[in-house]
Image (cartoon, rainbow, N blue to C red; front, side, top):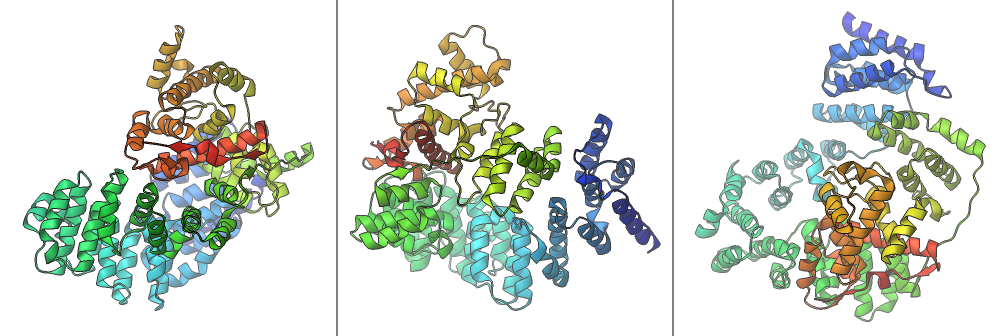
Length: 637
């Protein structure tokens, strides 16, 4: 007891001595202090409280006391008393790092089922972006007798991979309170399996009364299940459906043959689930047979992911009645997504209901996004890119620099995660567009174009196009695009998506520079261009990177019939894939349908963002009246 009290007293003394340091105009530190601070962070990540305490002791004069205290607590959080945590939260109330500690604490409180403390602290969690914490919040409701089935279906249907063990804890609590039906348990189990979490799928299945190994055996040896067919009970039928999905993920013929052979042994709902297990993979592979499989799936209780692919299949066939019908079967949280609001509007318009279609388009047309822009074009026949002007004084930028003092410090240390967290924390406190514009100007001044774009996108009434869609290094881009005859707006749209104009950007797969070139690609293009002096170190040289990236993009455009949509997809996923996707089309389709049915989520979002960006850049570079539809074009098989 004395040891805990002494520890708490030491923390309070530390807070009292240096709590005002972060209010200083600049954070002046020595390289030795910064190195010790980095080591302290590492000690916290490795849960080494002895080393963390020693390093924290040496950093009592460090001008970021909140982080020093946080890393010390974090290194041994499971053994830290609630009193120590509350002392920190009180001392640093209103800071980003206090909210981070509250996040950590809520996870522990959830694990301990301390719902009284959890319920007191959860409303104070500002960022509220942790799926595990959200699971515990629902568990607290369950403990009080509140039915959370709809909320659980939305949360886990979209984020079960991020939920970890908390997903099973939540579902177990629901089962204990008779909130989880057998059908629901199998539904969540199938979602876990579909998201490649076989162990979680097996555990959830036990909540439906299945043996621990029922799902595991079906997923590990699916061929055997398809050969012998479903057994007599519910568990064996569900296991058979799991096996169908596993085999169908690699090819459809075996799964189709088995289901045709054994479907009479299944109930109507089980047959529908079986066909949906086949249909979703057929849809992702863009097979023409996918449409027939989905028709057989009928009203199966499928995952949100499968719902989306079912509608995409109907879109590729331009079967507008089924687009409408299948959107109607989506859960409400999917129906509200601008993607499906737009396509529902398009289906209504195609079927002659212009009045309701316009209402849907109006509901999203003001959103500065791909589908918001397409909705605006449906209403007006064109898109108007807003022109804006603004003036920010030097004194306002200097004041903002003080507000962003921690973010700036972490950027100088190359602590990107912490810098972004501190920057975004301050943005949350800015309720007027004016302050966001000033913050964007500061980001530009300190060379953080990525933060300028992110900040500018938060404004509501004042759209500062030059901050949202900046055009740095213009003379280099103009020279490269003019030489090749490339659309400068499109190139800028692509670079904005690739690197946010950060020259030293490097992806987790090794792509580098403004145009995010892979080393092998850069070498290949340099050879094609006859650049005899090229070597690997030049890939991040701004002028070289732009020249090589534009040349590669031009090759892509020429190889893909001049389609910006297809060339953008090729730049992201490789040139062979868009050709294959194109070859599977049942008929010529508009570019928006092609983009929405790209099998890879990263590439699908990438193409939509690049073409949306390009349309905005075209407005800056030329006429403020633009057409995203025309830029997307038509893709024919």
